[in-house]
Image 1 (cartoon, one colour):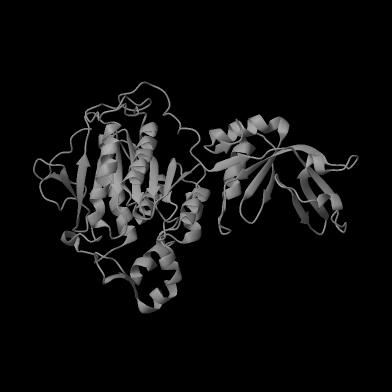
Image 2: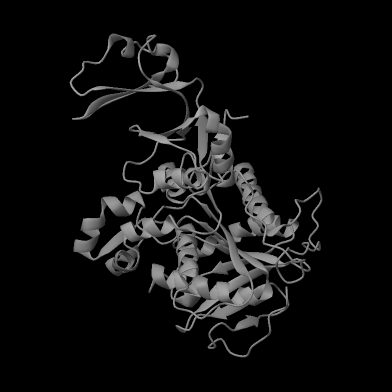
Length: 448
């Protein structure tokens, strides 16, 4: 990393100041406020992760130091930011809290770090993770800015994050009352009278309406790791599942944890997972014992300091989990008014069976052995089940599954149940289908 230059005065937008000999730096945001930064650096780092706290969690940024040190052990720098209006009294306490302004500050931080690295990563906890997603989406869209020079955004990881800035159940249940009253009272041990103004929600509804937001997530172009606590009561784990379903190739990892990850051992495992995820995308080696804080990350192919060639693809098996079901299936079509045959009603302990009646036909999906001899059927299909349950309001789930198979020219028969989706592919094309799904980042079970 090229050492940031000292600049006099905090009023200059994007100007970094060093304060003393420690790791403290300051970044003016152009609104008369200052981001307070802790820079955890390692010699010769070619990549860095920007670590973002949650809503109103200014005083909890020190928890990020543990993840920062894990990143240092893998040859990456870490920038831990304390954003204005999240409880930092020096920047106005909670006054002026704004999600779009938060994202704007995060993008400014990206632009400030960009000249010093080949690759950049974003990590955020809770709503800070959603802010990272917003910044990544605006980065991909260009945000109206001129072409950027320097390091590219190469990956995002979020922990306990909602799938949309207002997806917090507390907000959804009280949205109308919030609108009518003009504020939402948040009970917080650090600020028991913390009032969240309706303006905060109104800005999100205007700038990030949910349908457009979820459609944009379907086009997110960087690898995404979603880490969530299975016991999270603030942002339920269903939000993590929803987020993974919205982003093709995203990866979900559940831990036995609540929203604040208070168990040190579990938090350490999650931090190592995130650090390994970023290190793999950066091309940095995994730590081999000890703490090589001075280790230099190797040159990255296709970037400054590396050899010629394309940037390495994201590691495989980072997306949603698909399970290959046992047995071969047959597809049958009967007349629309035909009764359901007795041989199709027999209970089955395992496998997949489906019945769909329309005005034109009675369609059946059954194990091959359940079809009587001489009955016309299209056999030889294998089924893949997407890990569920899935929210019924999700969009783009099947599209994310079908896109790689369509590109590989594999025929697909798709089914959806109340809880999840199924893909049926011809057994003779199964190997091609599995290879295409693996290449797209899906994790496969039962397909070894």
